[in-house]
Length: 45
Image: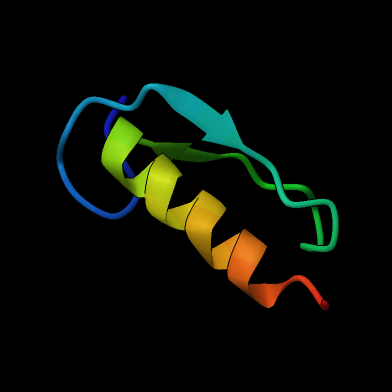
């Protein structure tokens, strides 16, 4: 399984609870880190 963003091997599957259908997205370590940074940046306060 490869990352949804690039073609590197996926390390995790991410499911966003607010996404309809709860579709899992495979992510490599680099894009998992970017996803986490984006989530933290979107947090209020």
